[in-house]
Length: 550
Image (cartoon, rainbow, N blue to C red; front, side, top):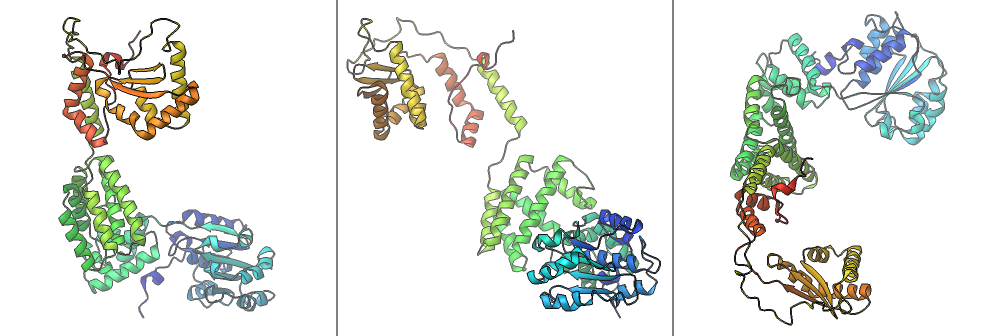
């Protein structure tokens, strides 16, 4: 009679446990030095060896040659435990024995009885977190002070559901997910022993699909064997078709379309996956893993430990990685992570995936940091060689017509001025009050002013011509009311806000204006301003940018 691979190849010795070496060593030492506990909890994901370890421990305790670090697997107790008909080793499924009555009948009422034949009476409780609260409470006293011939071995996939009072009375071993490489090695041993012709890359694909569970991977291997047929070789294509996996070519095509900004190809690819019945959320996760591999290939290159791929797959990955910058791969991975989370709750996953991938494909490309630095250095050199024109002489200046209405009041005598140090102090107090009130937009505009004066009953603010835009900010009705109210509070009398813009006195641009014109016309600067949606606030000449060395 055929026996499934997962049962036929269940480990029968501690040395056969895959990926749980630390736990196996601890239990073997406990057996070797006679220091075992009376109650254990084995916690971890499904298919990583929890129940198998419990059976191994039971065999080692009741083995005729034991207690021993390795059971002989030949004596009657060992064989009966393997077959599941040992009188003194009871396996209980907590899912079907959840109530307190079941616990009393199966466990508590039999504790007074000694072992029928073997050394210990052992209870293996699978999925113990499904026991009811009353059932756990009934076990408390027994777990704290069990008879010397009784041991409890409990397994659970949800340790957080086990009451703390139970946990405190047990030794807890947390089983890990099994690394993909170790699963592939174990599958190779099984395939060779069973005469299954399968490629290493196909085995790695099955191991990856097992997601850390050896039992799941063994079941997937048997599924692929059944799909291929007796004696037929199993290739990557067979595994992909049998298990409904997303092929490597599909992931390469999706990433290529993102690099080319080819939205039409992405939409056709999603439609094809949807029509073939693929889980689109799984596709998104696989695409995340692919971009992770692209990043590893970009940073490290060929690395068999981090990228367990065939030579052909590695060459394709490295070639595609050269099409992206590291920052672009990281940004794509983050976008896919957010998209995968959104797909969990999306009423229309296909539409959400289409929009998310189209958005990813049309993100602005990131310029390499080294190129940005070189561009800045080139701009700095160009500014350093800029020769300013000589300042306009007094004779070249056109006569300035001054308006009596807009001109600031000029002090005639010390007794009549309010533009003295005291007035400047009042202006600083005005700014400080605006800062405390959080009026940063108004404060920023005032900081750009060339002059702020208190003249009679007026608060006059003057801007140079190239900063005339700030005049509209201050004259906004709400902002004007705020400034006048704060001025009245700080200065102690009502002031009317007057804002003016200086006339351009010289026809020839000043050196600063020349520098600004050069910078604003520079294509690199234009690209920076457009990319980061910013504005040029200040231009610092190269000789002033860095302090001179002493």
